Length: 456
Image 1: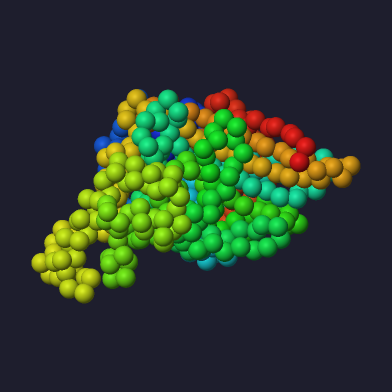
Image 2: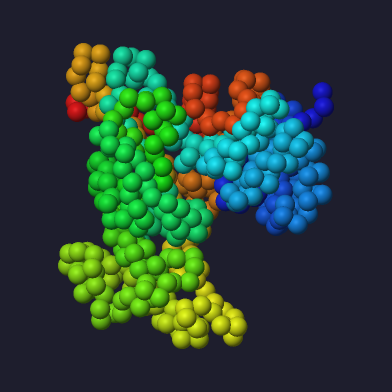
């Protein structure tokens, strides 16, 4: 039988567990794994000493011939590239009739390909990593089980956080990057957060979502709060709970993180563009910070103290000084031709936060995921179901985030190659055909939800 080729674009942080898992199954699945990255050394490091694996280099945006040749020769394509490149991969997969798998959110641009994907009888699977992905698998399993046992779903809330493990938590932000720093810095800027609460559709504008946080009932982690994800509304139907009166999906952070981040976002200090003159002229100084926090944002003395400590840790005043210096060399708030080293606030923050808030080689990250489901049981009594996953990484490339992104995606690829998935079209991993196989397999890797029932 001809050996099948699984082509993996991207050899970044989340690829290790994916590649290793598929390599271990290579002989059974009759596959060869090709890892392609614009950085050949990264790709080579990921496949070294693994069976049935090879590395290559390609740049999708400039080497179209080499990129398309890889797709044409593949049996199945996995994209771990940045989100903006998924569409390039998708169009090549359509051209050469190849199934495509990603861990990323399904974008409107991908939605536009739905008809063509279906007409060609292909499977394009998105949202099969950690968040999104593992959150879908675990949520739908819990909701399906409850409904099959006669429960009426009243409300659903789900929160996930890629955090630092307590043993490695040694900065006042109580956070270290286990994922792309840029995504953290720009979080929430894509539009208002939308969610359903008590049968009312709510829209929470940016940056207020970092102020209007949700208290999350996690006894072992009392200082964690949730901020709302961009759009929870479609998940009422996607999760099979169209009659629920509350549907909320959110992200977990330490409450001090959100307390200090809200004024950063409010005053444009994480903007990826030039600041508007009104924002620039309203920036605080060390002498005015407490006054502005108190009078403009209504912060308490305790919250002001938190902001002062966290801002001092990052050196936010250096950012503000840099902005003043750059604006002094510009005309009307825009760079003159002589301003050659312009940095946006987001650029500066990304550099500084990466320096001071990255995981050290011996640091351990933590993945925390929780679902809170309120139901009426078959007797009409109110119940509260809390399902929680806590997973600590092992340090280095063996992070909890990489594990929970890579393994669900690898297992989805395995199911497809085994012929156990018959779905076609543009889909997410929802339903028992996905969670019924992937979640039991993940338990072998220590990835398991704990279910607690209480009276509501």
